[in-house]
Image 1 (cartoon, rainbow over the protein chains, first blue to last red):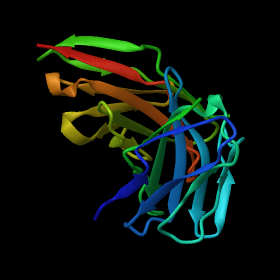
Image 2: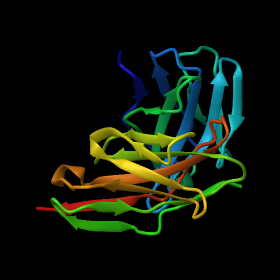
Image 3: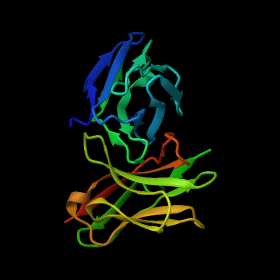
Image 4: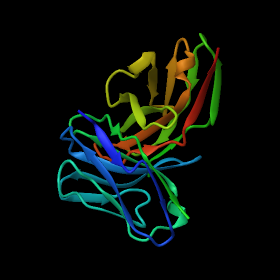
Length: 112
Length: 113
């Protein structure tokens, strides 16, 4: 199993550009989440999904959209990037019977 | 609202000595508590969890944590630190069976030879 994969690893955007961060898992996990990690602030939950077709907001959802059309994929969309969205983004997944989350390797995003 | 506090930004310990990384939490109802570790330029890895049962929880790499309900704490411990334990450690809490996992700000553990 590849576990949780994220692409790209690095991305530089200009203010106002849009992009999609990809996340995929091959463990048939029901739950998937997106977090951002900023220095001194730990990880903050952006959006999460408890299954295909079901998503909900986390702590810091503004500026981000998600959808979950399949169990495997959970993309995160930035519609109009802002410098405040410069961060490291992590995707995670877990099964409904296990509370252990599996994290991807992260995407480092810089918005100039 | 849920919250987690990790009062120490950094903990320094000599190799072979015991280590403690502190965590306190605030959540209504019964907490689900977790510790994760992050090595440089990597994602987070699960160490251990408390859901219910014995207050002393054992996890990966010789780590353990003690759930103390009266003090709302979940401190991470290891009897004998290794240099390879040096990393960033995160405590996290969720309420009941939800995926709203709230993380602390992290504690950097530095183990010196």
